[in-house]
Length: 287
View 1 (tube, rainbow, N blue to C red):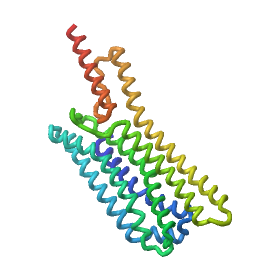
View 2: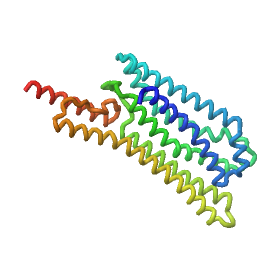
View 3: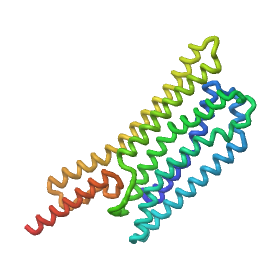
């Protein structure tokens, strides 16, 4: 897969992370009974929401495209300056992505519901905002993992400076884990509070059970997807490195260790192994 294809995938993951969660939020406020179907449509058609989503997504996507331009420039003409600029851009992308998502999920719902008369109840208003935070957390994780995987692929061939700092493997796993667990837990909690608040009398137990089962099935599916993607991103480089170690041990002297472009602990291991293999080859040649 060439650089342009990987760049398009990264931009696609960025667009998905900022466009899919708002749609799921609208489904959630209808599903939990915070808004009727007609009210949900009214929220969806709120001009301020459309302007906010489009402007915010366009700004983040344009910034990502500029950072990917640094990577293209480095691959086209690798110099010390372009390498450092490309590595800085690659390191900043996930951090800015997460920061932008945090602001997005905190501000976004309020642009659509702040002046709605049917949400005059402060509790219902707060629950609408909270479910937006939880939904964006949960549904943004697959796009974040996809972006990270493609960033690793597009960085192949770009050396990692000795003083370079990036998100560690543990950091990536914790981000994915916390976003999934906090998002899923908050969604269940807000959904339960919504049903209890809106249906304090009558068939509360039946409504609560039905809503929790439905949302639970969706959240388990998303959490499973996030877990599988996280495990693949961590385990695949380890398995690849183990296979290469076996090949070197079997006498493959021409093998170049893959994964040296990674800017985390796995990349450190790959670069250290490549250095050891190179020294072993030199010793064998001298002998």
